[in-house]
Image (tube, rainbow, N blue to C red; front, side, top):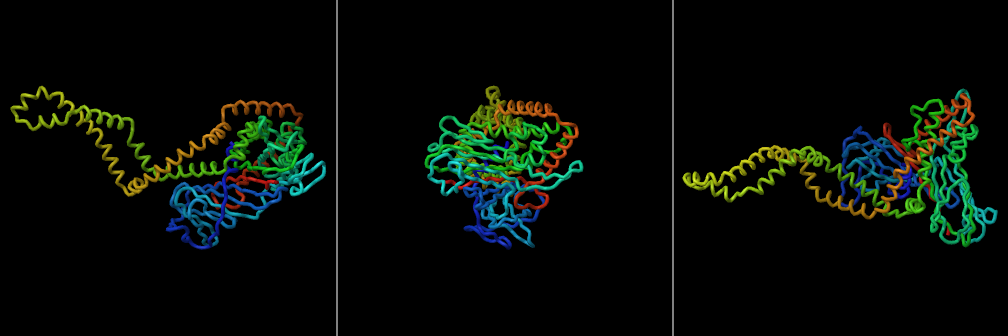
Length: 517
């Protein structure tokens, strides 16, 4: 769900370090970077762009965080990036640049790096402030009292020209935009919002803004008279009003996610009729509705919660994946050898050994032939127990031999040597999960069963509005054609910086304005 992506994206930090323009170099105490053979293994790249804004929405700085995932560890992979000051944020691994190409030596399957850029993001945000009806700069507004209006304009700047049924149109790269602002506990009253929602529980209030900037211009929703689309999804202008004493304001937060990063929104198999349009609009609206249906406490916790704890959770989960990858051969061996039949055989051996009187059996074996004949009847039960143990061993020994042989390989010996470290990482994972209980509860609430009912209502509503319209067949085909072009544009935009050929990628944008006061 988009909400989960927004949560994790909002809470991941960025850093920087100098970029190296040569072969791998030493970095970090007692660290020697390993060189691996260039591989064509499957690689994915997930990118988060952090756009730091001034209070008026102008750009202050852009940090970019990239997550590379390779299908196998200990390989060299090719990457591409136009970022400056690239640095790996979790290890001392340095980028390798040869012949103008960027490579990474992947010790594990995952690598995280940061960089900075001056490239313009596809979405721009303009924020204007008014005091008693007159425009005022954020700096001058600080500490003032009166009627305050905050006008927010979101603009999609990424567009291309297309031709549908012989007519030319501009389509804008489709992105879902979500914004939020916590209303200060003191100094704000009579709060209202245009084209947004106010969530509150008596002690907290938060303003939520949702929209798909450029949608109306791309598919002509308002010209076709579809109120379900034009009234909610096409919002790009928002206005927050309040009576304020000693004005001060925290950060305005926004997130924008292209449709390429949302699996549910695709133009595959979309027909040129009402049903195809219904499905896309229903999928889009269900995501918007899910985001706006959260309780105020959940939204506040997610948008403005404990950043350190969330980042710790993300890193710990990533470490857990590394632990699994490092110990996968051992895990697979145990799964394959410790079948139900083998476990039952080992359990039976343990039980029979417990019942066997070894001292008595050994004593009987050392008696003279005459004495042994005299006590054979008495020892019949003990010899039966010994026979059972022998049978148990016969069944268990092949399993033990397989384990012994497999565990003595170089790979397994290396894994066994690292088990104490792996167990310590698992202990830290358990501790972090316990500490993150509230955060995990909020995330799980996003995907509760109520969403299924919400989606059904949404889809039914979409169908009702679209079928109730007076669209001709030609208009339906025109709408479907423009929507296909629009969605196709969205599917092709999946990276902000750059990537190597053949790499699947996703991208999302996080905007945060500077606080006032």
